[in-house]
Image 1 (tube, rainbow, N blue to C red):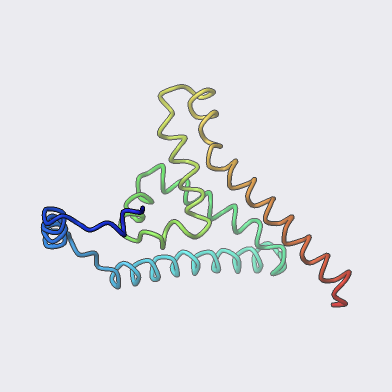
Image 2 (cartoon, rainbow, N blue to C red):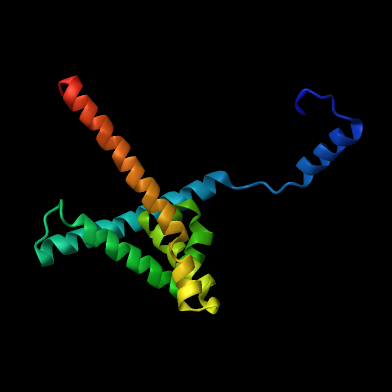
Length: 158
């Protein structure tokens, strides 16, 4: 029998009421607005970097994506090293962790956290813990999407 179907004792009911009374209310709308504004600003900076590569280095719109991503990840890593990105993450929440800059922040944070263990076993051994899983899931997802596209084109007549 699951715990949902059990009748609650009066003490449990009283405890739940006390818990709800003292629970801090999360400002969900305010957090969503912060995440939207910060995430949008990060994406706007990324778009500006894309235009920079297009106009000053003669990239096309299709080829400017790779250096833009590399630049954004590098900037996030640099800001994490100076402690700025962590404060931004505290302020913005998901708005700073969802864009690709959040990946750069997560990678460099694990390296900073384990630097006392040395460069090889500490930094080198721990920097790719997150990156490895992201790469594996990215490659697998790309494979599944390519497989679906191939099936639709071959047998779907698209």
